[in-house]
Length: 190
Image (cartoon, rainbow, N blue to C red; front, side, top):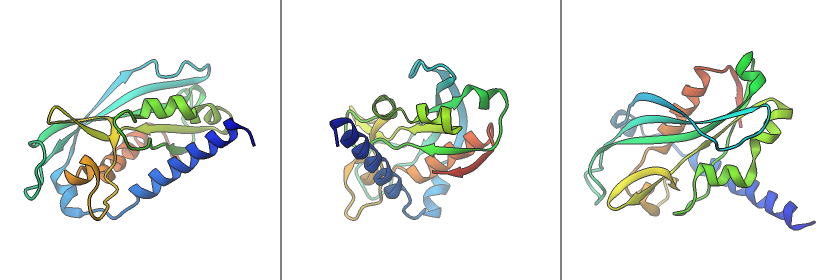
């Protein structure tokens, strides 16, 4: 087994762990505090690959500070993700799988950094699937910035800013899926 095989397996395990952490329960009261107000689409040059189109998509959402913890004030958050769709699916949308690729935690973690490591969209060309790389959140100068960082894995006790401040990542991922399904028919989510 060479270093590339080991790196690929570690990346896959990290992705699966990230997915498993997000599968935790949904708190209905937390869902009421956030709502998806608007979707903003920005073209990005995240991956220049023939036959694949990637773009940064933003979901503008409300964040309501929990009353029982010290967190930044309530705000409007720009929750973003990178969407990579094979060009043939853009031209003729047909039933396809969706791969959600979650980056690990940390200040330098982001959907773009993870995409540049794993390139799941390359496999999407041959296997006809759509890839989404969502971004977690972090604290920058007492403001919540959602361009990477950590996820709310609903740990007990809470670890990291996203858990402490009760960022509703489960709701965000639901909105990512809804956004993608509004443009492409999805057969399954991986």
